[in-house]
Image (cartoon, rainbow, N blue to C red; front, side, top):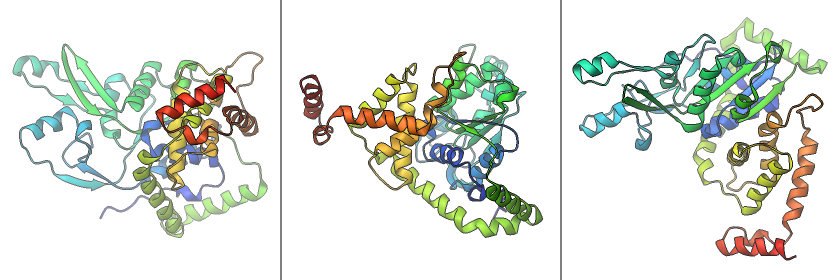
Amino acid sequence: MTRRPSVYPFTAIVGQERMKRALILNAIDMRIGGVLIRGERGTGKSTAARALAVLLPEIDVIADSPFGDDPDEPSTWSDEVRERFDKGEELPIARRKTRFVDLPVSATEDRVVGTLDIEKAIQKGERHFDPGVLANANRGILYVDEVNLLDDHVVDLLLDSAAMGVNVVEREGISFTHPARFILVGTMNPEEGDLRPQLLDRFALSVEVHGIQSADERMLILERHIGYEADADQFRQQWDAEEQKLSAQIAAARELVDSVTYSRRDLYAIATLTSNLHIDGHRADLVILKTARAQAAFEGRTQINQRDILMAAELAIPHRLKRGPFADAQMSVTALEDQLDQVMSEWGEGDEASEMSEDGEQSAVKKKANP
Protein backbone atom coordinates (compact mmCIF):
# COMPACT_ATOMS: atom_id res chain seq x y z
CA MET A 1 0.00 0.00 0.00
CA THR A 2 1.31 3.43 -0.98
CA ARG A 3 2.28 5.55 2.00
CA ARG A 4 0.14 8.64 2.27
CA PRO A 5 2.19 11.84 1.97
CA SER A 6 2.45 13.94 5.09
CA VAL A 7 0.64 16.95 3.68
CA TYR A 8 -0.77 19.46 6.16
CA PRO A 9 -4.36 18.36 6.94
CA PHE A 10 -7.14 20.34 5.29
CA THR A 11 -9.27 20.24 8.42
CA ALA A 12 -6.41 21.68 10.52
CA ILE A 13 -6.34 24.94 8.53
CA VAL A 14 -7.47 27.77 10.81
CA GLY A 15 -10.11 30.17 9.46
CA GLN A 16 -10.31 30.99 5.73
CA GLU A 17 -13.75 29.36 5.65
CA ARG A 18 -14.76 30.86 2.32
CA MET A 19 -11.64 29.55 0.60
CA LYS A 20 -12.15 26.07 2.04
CA ARG A 21 -15.79 26.07 1.04
CA ALA A 22 -14.96 27.06 -2.56
CA LEU A 23 -12.45 24.20 -2.80
CA ILE A 24 -14.83 21.65 -1.29
CA LEU A 25 -17.71 22.60 -3.60
CA ASN A 26 -15.45 22.26 -6.66
CA ALA A 27 -14.38 18.87 -5.36
CA ILE A 28 -18.04 17.81 -5.14
CA ASP A 29 -18.79 18.97 -8.70
CA MET A 30 -15.85 19.60 -11.02
CA ARG A 31 -18.29 21.03 -13.55
CA ILE A 32 -18.46 24.23 -11.49
CA GLY A 33 -15.27 25.36 -13.23
CA GLY A 34 -12.53 26.05 -10.71
CA VAL A 35 -11.60 28.70 -8.19
CA LEU A 36 -9.23 31.66 -8.14
CA ILE A 37 -7.69 32.41 -4.74
CA ARG A 38 -6.23 35.90 -4.38
CA GLY A 39 -4.25 37.05 -1.40
CA GLU A 40 -0.88 38.05 0.01
CA ARG A 41 1.85 35.52 0.73
CA GLY A 42 1.56 33.27 3.75
CA THR A 43 -2.23 32.99 3.87
CA GLY A 44 -2.45 29.24 3.21
CA LYS A 45 -3.45 29.30 -0.47
CA SER A 46 -1.17 26.52 -1.71
CA THR A 47 -1.44 24.61 1.59
CA ALA A 48 -5.22 24.34 1.18
CA ALA A 49 -5.01 23.22 -2.46
CA ARG A 50 -2.47 20.47 -1.71
CA ALA A 51 -4.39 19.36 1.37
CA LEU A 52 -7.58 18.97 -0.66
CA ALA A 53 -5.95 16.43 -3.00
CA VAL A 54 -5.01 14.15 -0.08
CA LEU A 55 -8.52 14.52 1.31
CA LEU A 56 -10.37 13.45 -1.85
CA PRO A 57 -11.68 9.88 -2.22
CA GLU A 58 -9.84 7.32 -4.34
CA ILE A 59 -11.14 6.84 -7.89
CA ASP A 60 -11.44 3.92 -10.32
CA VAL A 61 -9.44 4.36 -13.53
CA ILE A 62 -8.60 2.34 -16.61
CA ALA A 63 -5.22 1.21 -15.36
CA ASP A 64 -3.02 1.52 -18.44
CA SER A 65 -4.55 4.72 -19.79
CA PRO A 66 -2.47 7.90 -19.44
CA PHE A 67 -5.71 9.87 -19.28
CA GLY A 68 -7.19 8.34 -16.13
CA ASP A 69 -10.36 7.38 -18.02
CA ASP A 70 -13.39 6.60 -15.86
CA PRO A 71 -14.44 2.96 -16.51
CA ASP A 72 -18.03 3.82 -15.52
CA GLU A 73 -18.37 6.70 -18.00
CA PRO A 74 -17.79 5.36 -21.56
CA SER A 75 -19.16 8.59 -23.07
CA THR A 76 -16.12 10.46 -21.70
CA TRP A 77 -13.43 8.01 -22.82
CA SER A 78 -10.40 9.15 -24.75
CA ASP A 79 -10.05 8.21 -28.43
CA GLU A 80 -7.33 5.72 -27.48
CA VAL A 81 -9.45 3.81 -24.94
CA ARG A 82 -12.54 3.88 -27.16
CA GLU A 83 -10.56 2.39 -30.07
CA ARG A 84 -9.22 -0.37 -27.82
CA PHE A 85 -12.72 -1.12 -26.55
CA ASP A 86 -14.08 -1.30 -30.10
CA LYS A 87 -11.37 -3.85 -30.95
CA GLY A 88 -12.55 -6.04 -28.07
CA GLU A 89 -9.47 -5.46 -25.89
CA GLU A 90 -9.74 -5.94 -22.15
CA LEU A 91 -9.61 -2.69 -20.16
CA PRO A 92 -8.00 -3.36 -16.77
CA ILE A 93 -9.32 -1.28 -13.87
CA ALA A 94 -7.27 0.06 -10.97
CA ARG A 95 -7.97 2.29 -7.96
CA ARG A 96 -5.78 5.28 -7.17
CA LYS A 97 -5.59 8.47 -5.17
CA THR A 98 -6.66 11.75 -6.74
CA ARG A 99 -3.72 13.41 -8.47
CA PHE A 100 -2.37 16.84 -7.67
CA VAL A 101 -0.69 18.36 -10.72
CA ASP A 102 1.39 21.51 -10.35
CA LEU A 103 1.62 23.61 -13.53
CA PRO A 104 4.74 25.78 -13.78
CA VAL A 105 4.34 29.40 -14.84
CA SER A 106 6.72 28.74 -17.75
CA ALA A 107 4.46 26.06 -19.28
CA THR A 108 3.95 26.23 -23.05
CA GLU A 109 0.83 25.32 -25.03
CA ASP A 110 2.29 21.97 -26.16
CA ARG A 111 3.27 21.12 -22.60
CA VAL A 112 -0.29 21.80 -21.46
CA VAL A 113 -2.44 20.22 -24.20
CA GLY A 114 -0.05 17.54 -25.51
CA THR A 115 1.25 16.95 -29.03
CA LEU A 116 0.40 14.85 -32.08
CA ASP A 117 3.25 13.16 -33.96
CA ILE A 118 2.53 14.46 -37.46
CA GLU A 119 5.58 12.75 -38.98
CA LYS A 120 4.49 9.31 -37.80
CA ALA A 121 0.95 9.99 -38.99
CA ILE A 122 2.11 10.93 -42.49
CA GLN A 123 4.75 8.24 -42.92
CA LYS A 124 3.06 5.27 -41.22
CA GLY A 125 -0.58 6.32 -41.07
CA GLU A 126 -0.52 5.96 -37.27
CA ARG A 127 -2.05 8.46 -34.89
CA HIS A 128 0.30 8.96 -31.96
CA PHE A 129 -0.48 11.41 -29.15
CA ASP A 130 1.99 12.51 -26.49
CA PRO A 131 -0.12 13.48 -23.44
CA GLY A 132 0.31 16.84 -21.73
CA VAL A 133 -0.57 18.31 -18.37
CA LEU A 134 -4.32 18.22 -19.05
CA ALA A 135 -4.20 14.44 -19.52
CA ASN A 136 -2.32 13.95 -16.28
CA ALA A 137 -4.71 16.22 -14.38
CA ASN A 138 -7.92 14.56 -15.58
CA ARG A 139 -10.20 13.81 -12.60
CA GLY A 140 -7.68 15.45 -10.27
CA ILE A 141 -6.54 18.89 -9.15
CA LEU A 142 -4.63 21.19 -11.50
CA TYR A 143 -2.86 23.82 -9.43
CA VAL A 144 -1.43 27.00 -10.94
CA ASP A 145 0.48 29.26 -8.59
CA GLU A 146 0.93 32.87 -9.74
CA VAL A 147 -1.67 32.28 -12.44
CA ASN A 148 -1.59 36.00 -13.21
CA LEU A 149 1.98 35.55 -14.51
CA LEU A 150 1.00 32.70 -16.86
CA ASP A 151 0.65 33.45 -20.58
CA ASP A 152 -2.93 34.58 -21.30
CA HIS A 153 -3.30 32.04 -24.11
CA VAL A 154 -2.35 29.18 -21.78
CA VAL A 155 -4.81 30.43 -19.14
CA ASP A 156 -7.49 30.44 -21.85
CA LEU A 157 -6.70 26.80 -22.68
CA LEU A 158 -6.95 25.78 -19.03
CA LEU A 159 -10.25 27.57 -18.55
CA ASP A 160 -11.69 26.08 -21.76
CA SER A 161 -10.86 22.57 -20.58
CA ALA A 162 -12.15 23.23 -17.05
CA ALA A 163 -15.46 24.40 -18.53
CA MET A 164 -15.86 21.75 -21.26
CA GLY A 165 -14.25 18.76 -19.54
CA VAL A 166 -12.49 17.70 -22.72
CA ASN A 167 -9.23 18.44 -24.54
CA VAL A 168 -9.17 18.34 -28.36
CA VAL A 169 -5.84 18.60 -30.15
CA GLU A 170 -5.84 19.15 -33.93
CA ARG A 171 -2.84 19.30 -36.24
CA GLU A 172 -2.77 19.05 -40.05
CA GLY A 173 -6.26 17.59 -40.27
CA ILE A 174 -5.56 14.99 -37.55
CA SER A 175 -7.30 15.23 -34.18
CA PHE A 176 -7.21 13.51 -30.81
CA THR A 177 -9.69 13.87 -27.95
CA HIS A 178 -9.40 12.91 -24.31
CA PRO A 179 -11.27 13.79 -21.09
CA ALA A 180 -9.89 16.76 -19.17
CA ARG A 181 -12.19 17.31 -16.22
CA PHE A 182 -10.32 18.63 -13.23
CA ILE A 183 -10.52 21.04 -10.31
CA LEU A 184 -8.68 24.13 -11.50
CA VAL A 185 -7.15 26.04 -8.60
CA GLY A 186 -5.35 29.25 -9.43
CA THR A 187 -3.61 31.36 -6.81
CA MET A 188 -2.09 34.80 -7.09
CA ASN A 189 -0.86 37.81 -5.18
CA PRO A 190 -2.70 40.90 -6.50
CA GLU A 191 0.33 43.02 -5.63
CA GLU A 192 2.14 41.33 -8.53
CA GLY A 193 -0.51 42.27 -11.11
CA ASP A 194 -4.09 41.20 -11.78
CA LEU A 195 -5.71 39.06 -14.44
CA ARG A 196 -7.46 40.66 -17.38
CA PRO A 197 -11.21 41.03 -16.69
CA GLN A 198 -12.01 38.58 -19.52
CA LEU A 199 -9.95 35.86 -17.82
CA LEU A 200 -11.12 36.81 -14.33
CA ASP A 201 -14.75 36.27 -15.34
CA ARG A 202 -13.98 32.80 -16.64
CA PHE A 203 -12.92 31.52 -13.24
CA ALA A 204 -16.16 30.12 -11.85
CA LEU A 205 -15.50 31.12 -8.23
CA SER A 206 -13.13 33.57 -6.63
CA VAL A 207 -12.14 34.29 -3.04
CA GLU A 208 -9.87 36.84 -1.45
CA VAL A 209 -7.85 35.72 1.56
CA HIS A 210 -6.15 37.91 4.11
CA GLY A 211 -3.95 37.30 7.12
CA ILE A 212 -6.00 36.48 10.22
CA GLN A 213 -6.05 39.35 12.72
CA SER A 214 -7.42 37.58 15.80
CA ALA A 215 -4.59 36.99 18.29
CA ASP A 216 -6.19 33.75 19.53
CA GLU A 217 -6.45 32.33 16.00
CA ARG A 218 -2.92 33.43 15.11
CA MET A 219 -1.67 31.64 18.22
CA LEU A 220 -3.62 28.53 17.17
CA ILE A 221 -1.95 28.66 13.74
CA LEU A 222 1.44 28.84 15.43
CA GLU A 223 0.71 25.89 17.72
CA ARG A 224 -0.53 23.69 14.90
CA HIS A 225 2.37 24.47 12.58
CA ILE A 226 4.90 23.83 15.33
CA GLY A 227 3.25 20.46 15.95
CA TYR A 228 3.24 19.67 12.23
CA GLU A 229 6.90 20.58 11.77
CA ALA A 230 7.93 18.58 14.84
CA ASP A 231 6.30 15.35 13.62
CA ALA A 232 4.20 15.58 10.44
CA ASP A 233 3.00 11.96 10.55
CA GLN A 234 1.87 12.16 14.15
CA PHE A 235 0.15 15.47 13.48
CA ARG A 236 -1.77 13.94 10.58
CA GLN A 237 -2.81 11.03 12.79
CA GLN A 238 -4.29 13.48 15.28
CA TRP A 239 -6.46 14.92 12.51
CA ASP A 240 -7.19 11.65 10.75
CA ALA A 241 -10.71 11.26 12.14
CA GLU A 242 -11.69 14.75 10.97
CA GLU A 243 -10.09 14.15 7.58
CA GLN A 244 -11.93 10.85 7.11
CA LYS A 245 -15.22 12.45 8.12
CA LEU A 246 -14.89 15.27 5.58
CA SER A 247 -13.65 12.87 2.88
CA ALA A 248 -16.73 10.69 3.37
CA GLN A 249 -18.98 13.75 3.28
CA ILE A 250 -17.48 14.85 -0.06
CA ALA A 251 -17.82 11.33 -1.49
CA ALA A 252 -21.50 11.17 -0.45
CA ALA A 253 -22.15 14.63 -1.92
CA ARG A 254 -20.61 13.56 -5.24
CA GLU A 255 -23.14 10.74 -5.43
CA LEU A 256 -26.01 13.06 -4.51
CA VAL A 257 -25.31 16.24 -6.47
CA ASP A 258 -26.97 15.16 -9.73
CA SER A 259 -30.18 14.43 -7.81
CA VAL A 260 -30.41 17.90 -6.28
CA THR A 261 -33.45 19.74 -7.63
CA TYR A 262 -34.40 23.40 -7.91
CA SER A 263 -37.56 25.34 -8.61
CA ARG A 264 -38.43 28.08 -11.07
CA ARG A 265 -38.44 30.44 -8.13
CA ASP A 266 -34.77 29.56 -7.55
CA LEU A 267 -33.95 30.22 -11.20
CA TYR A 268 -35.82 33.53 -11.06
CA ALA A 269 -33.92 34.52 -7.93
CA ILE A 270 -30.54 33.77 -9.54
CA ALA A 271 -31.36 35.49 -12.83
CA THR A 272 -32.81 38.59 -11.17
CA LEU A 273 -29.90 38.85 -8.74
CA THR A 274 -27.29 38.84 -11.52
CA SER A 275 -29.41 41.18 -13.64
CA ASN A 276 -29.85 43.71 -10.82
CA LEU A 277 -26.09 43.69 -10.24
CA HIS A 278 -25.42 44.25 -13.97
CA ILE A 279 -23.30 41.13 -14.33
CA ASP A 280 -22.20 40.67 -17.95
CA GLY A 281 -23.01 37.42 -19.76
CA HIS A 282 -24.71 34.36 -18.33
CA ARG A 283 -21.77 32.40 -16.93
CA ALA A 284 -22.38 33.67 -13.39
CA ASP A 285 -25.99 32.44 -13.43
CA LEU A 286 -24.93 28.91 -14.34
CA VAL A 287 -22.09 28.92 -11.83
CA ILE A 288 -24.40 30.01 -9.00
CA LEU A 289 -26.86 27.22 -9.80
CA LYS A 290 -24.16 24.53 -9.97
CA THR A 291 -22.51 25.79 -6.79
CA ALA A 292 -25.83 25.97 -4.92
CA ARG A 293 -26.58 22.36 -5.90
CA ALA A 294 -23.16 21.28 -4.65
CA GLN A 295 -23.73 23.12 -1.37
CA ALA A 296 -27.08 21.37 -0.90
CA ALA A 297 -25.48 17.98 -1.66
CA PHE A 298 -22.69 18.71 0.83
CA GLU A 299 -25.34 19.15 3.51
CA GLY A 300 -27.12 15.97 2.40
CA ARG A 301 -30.17 17.69 0.87
CA THR A 302 -31.84 17.12 -2.52
CA GLN A 303 -33.40 20.59 -2.90
CA ILE A 304 -31.56 23.91 -2.98
CA ASN A 305 -32.73 26.75 -0.74
CA GLN A 306 -32.17 30.48 -0.43
CA ARG A 307 -29.11 30.00 1.78
CA ASP A 308 -27.47 27.80 -0.87
CA ILE A 309 -28.02 30.49 -3.49
CA LEU A 310 -26.60 33.15 -1.17
CA MET A 311 -23.49 31.11 -0.38
CA ALA A 312 -22.97 30.43 -4.09
CA ALA A 313 -23.43 34.10 -4.98
CA GLU A 314 -20.79 35.09 -2.40
CA LEU A 315 -18.26 33.07 -4.38
CA ALA A 316 -19.45 33.71 -7.93
CA ILE A 317 -20.35 37.41 -8.02
CA PRO A 318 -17.72 39.70 -6.38
CA HIS A 319 -15.01 39.22 -9.02
CA ARG A 320 -17.58 39.88 -11.77
CA LEU A 321 -18.81 43.22 -10.45
CA LYS A 322 -18.05 46.24 -12.59
CA ARG A 323 -14.70 47.80 -11.88
CA GLY A 324 -13.93 51.42 -12.43
CA PRO A 325 -11.85 54.28 -11.05
CA PHE A 326 -14.58 55.18 -8.55
CA ALA A 327 -16.07 51.70 -8.00
CA ASP A 328 -15.02 49.16 -5.43
CA ALA A 329 -15.66 45.66 -6.81
CA GLN A 330 -16.52 44.23 -3.44
CA MET A 331 -19.90 43.34 -2.01
CA SER A 332 -20.68 42.36 1.52
CA VAL A 333 -22.59 39.21 2.38
CA THR A 334 -25.26 41.38 3.99
CA ALA A 335 -25.74 43.35 0.77
CA LEU A 336 -26.10 40.14 -1.24
CA GLU A 337 -28.56 38.79 1.32
CA ASP A 338 -30.65 41.97 1.12
CA GLN A 339 -30.71 41.73 -2.67
CA LEU A 340 -31.77 38.08 -2.54
CA ASP A 341 -34.48 38.73 0.06
CA GLN A 342 -35.91 41.43 -2.17
CA VAL A 343 -35.88 39.16 -5.22
CA MET A 344 -37.59 36.33 -3.34
CA SER A 345 -40.30 38.65 -2.05
CA GLU A 346 -40.98 39.88 -5.60
CA TRP A 347 -41.81 36.36 -6.75
CA GLY A 348 -44.94 36.21 -4.58
CA GLU A 349 -46.20 34.09 -1.72
CA GLY A 350 -48.53 31.79 -3.66
CA ASP A 351 -46.34 30.68 -6.53
CA GLU A 352 -44.14 28.04 -4.89
CA ALA A 353 -46.61 25.14 -5.32
CA SER A 354 -46.88 25.56 -9.08
CA GLU A 355 -43.19 26.06 -9.86
CA MET A 356 -42.25 22.52 -10.86
CA SER A 357 -44.75 21.95 -13.69
CA GLU A 358 -45.15 23.42 -17.15
CA ASP A 359 -48.65 24.64 -16.27
CA GLY A 360 -47.20 26.19 -13.14
CA GLU A 361 -44.71 28.11 -15.27
CA GLN A 362 -47.53 29.75 -17.22
CA SER A 363 -49.61 30.55 -14.14
CA ALA A 364 -46.62 32.07 -12.35
CA VAL A 365 -45.95 34.39 -15.27
CA LYS A 366 -49.61 35.37 -15.48
CA LYS A 367 -49.76 36.07 -11.77
CA LYS A 368 -46.80 38.43 -11.98
CA ALA A 369 -48.24 40.16 -15.04
CA ASN A 370 -51.70 40.46 -13.52
CA PRO A 371 -51.43 40.69 -9.72
